[in-house]
Amino acid sequence: MQRGRSDMSMHKILIAALMISGAQTVVAQQSRFGEPATQADIDKRFWSVFPDGENLPDGQGTAVEGAELFENNCHICHMNPPDKLTDYEPEDPADTLFGGQGTIGTDHMVATIGSYWPYPTTVFNYIRKAMPYTSPMSLTNSEYYALTAFLLSENGIIGENDVINKDTLPKVVMPNHDNFINAYPEVPKKYRTKNE
Amino acid sequence: MTHSKTKTLVVDATDQAAGNGLMSRRFFINSALATGATLASGAPAIAQDAIVGEGQEDWTLYPGDDLPLYGDVSQFEKGRVQRFVAPPTGGRTASSSGRTPHHLLQGTITPSGLHFEVTHHGIPDIDPAKHKVVIHGMVKQPLKWDIEALENYPTVTRKYFMECSGNSRVCWAEKPDQNFMYMTHGLVSGSEWTGIPLSTLLDEVGVSPDAKWIIAEGGDSGSLSRSIPIDKALDDTIIAIYQNGERIRPSQGYPMRLLNPGFEGNTSVKWLRSLYVTDKPVMSRFETSKYTDKLYDGKALQFSLEMDVKSMITRPSSAISLKKKGLYEITGLAWSGRGKIAKVEVSADGGKTWAEAAIEGPVYDKMLTRFRIPWMWDGSPAILQSRATDEAGRLQPTREELLAARGKDAFYHYHAIHSWSVNAKGAIRHVYA
Image 1 (cartoon, rainbow over the protein chains, first blue to last red):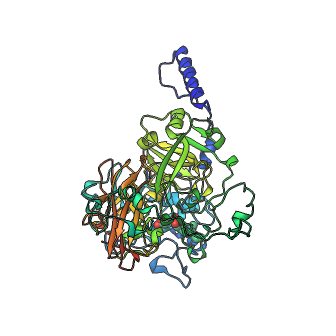
Image 2: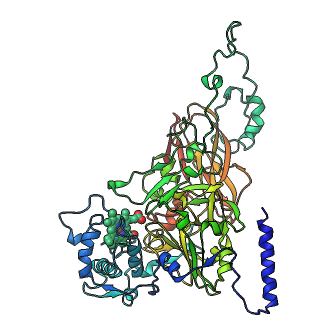
Image 3: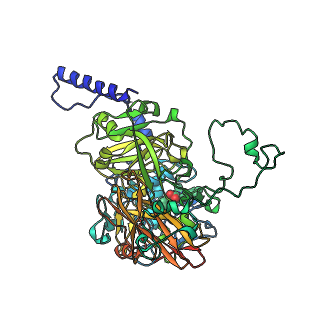
């Protein structure tokens, strides 16, 4: 294949074109085989929301509204909060979503949204794109806000009538927020073995 | 593993490389002459009046099958050489893992169908005609590509290991796990990957000088996402479309996946469909709730991305007991997320003495490296261990050292020296030593 070579000449033509046009500033290289991505292309594939609130959608909800949604959409796989156990609790529950506060760093750690997660936006981000497990993305943004509020409230982090939306969610402070240490590019020496 | 005719072997003291029977790396070569030579003669003579094929097996006497369009393993290997997949619990689909049977494999390339996989939201069945990857965010022009468009670019082909940071997770536990090598070392594999350097595509979108991270998202039903440091993305990250010469399989990210050499496997986002260039990490579930390493003091390591220097003895191991005294080959694999393997040492006496193993080259950057050393088992109890050193000079720690540094609940990134105990009967067990 001559790929390498044609690639090269393409590059040269491009540089020549830039020189002829007298371009002084850095111009994005012409794409060889990519097509321009439209906003619709991006929206379909981009689900990330950030701790500072970037990319959070409109809509809102409270824990009170979230309670019923949780019962109908989530409780079949996840346990209720420890103080609200019912006659039905799943036999082989998926990840524990409540409790565990104060256990991190002890001999029996229970890592949950309340005891471990450093950012509230992660809750909304994850459940909106991935839950309910068997039918992700099947609820509305406001319903996902309400469920987020329920998860935060049942973990004792917000009140049950607090409105959660794109402005309020990033302001919620998670109890374990300060306990994460960046290990890139290097694990701090304290947590490395002597010959590493 | 090699059973040899020990009677004909002449061992003198200069062949010993370390305690309890470890021999010089060159022992097999030196002793080849002594062990060969005894076959031939003794085969029963065929009667004069019989057809000449008398005594041959059917496969020698009858033409074999037609050629299959896609080759498969021998029927005698099926069901023997396969991954260990834990059954989904409670009848619920959930995250699961398929683990490579290293004790049954050789070389350094893991067959694609035996490559480990961890999936949190099942394996999507993606129609490549409907799949595109977009690169957007802090760029001059957002662009998209499907697999046919990507195929037009100059490709690179490289061999890399991939390891889940949850590999060897059971070794943090108080008691040594006894599920052969699947549970202790089944979440690492090696492949030859072909793809487009991500830097090529980043050049085309025109990345802002303020960019620090790239958020990669997959098209599975969990839209799995991870934040990749920009220095990595511009260095050796590729968008892989082939594995071991063929298009990557659905379970490995078909039609395209990110591949971050030497990084924890979860960052090599499968079914890749969005790369968002930005100045901050997204703090996704898979870099906060999961894939963070809990320390003894209540802190946790986050973005512990580079895989540590590590090795394992694949044979002999707990699935393979020794049937008689004599000469064996100890072999295994070593790797490091920080470059090439420089040295592997083996001990047969629980770490009291070490001998350097032979390394089978060429040695590649961030790839599994096979080592071998001859061992004369005299029938007494032994503890087999291997420890690797990478080119950055990092030495694989003992279990004690690792637990002292991180505590017992880090869950991820276990990479300490592994120990196999051999008892007088030749049975092998995983032990902490």
